[in-house]
Image (cartoon, rainbow, N blue to C red; front, side, top):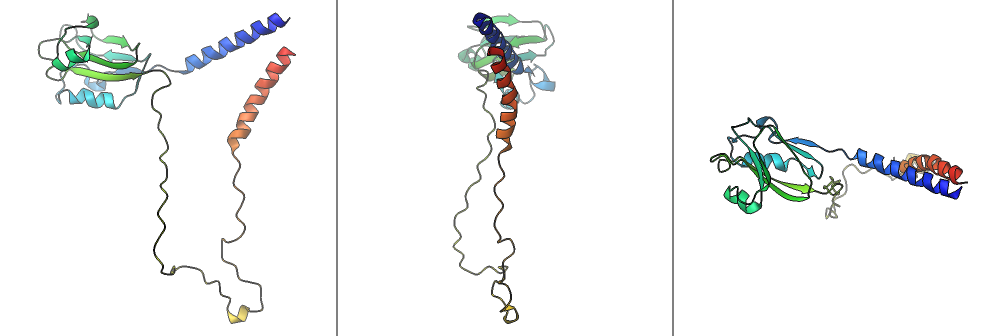
Length: 209
């Protein structure tokens, strides 16, 4: 009986792991977007700007759109990339377009077109690939604390808290907004988390009882 419970627990864990893996979606990047894989009019800076606007993760796919027999694509090391040389290639030369390349390793990757002077004219691409889950996520900008003011002049719009002679015998005057502040709102995330975890815990407890 205990063996059946353990097997069921392993099965549930495997299903959850598969669901989490499926939740990490791979991205298809069309190199240059509408420009495609061509000799860019703006030179290599065109592909540099395109790559700078993207985030590349292992499992993503690069799509090089080019006309067969007019361009090709080859991955090379940095030295060959800088000199626009096809020496020491990484993988095989792809001559048929469009070409799909799946990013399988983290780090720097360099691609060139080996046709004539195409690379020297700017048909080259360098990207940085990150492991899954390691891509930088946007962070909320911290609000700077303003320095204390040195202005000693009285505020022009400060409310007058001194009661008038007519109200000397009446109730003490109070400044608007100076009442007891409301208690800070409680975090709803704890309630949501508890509401989600409770049925899951109940299922596992009833399963193993």
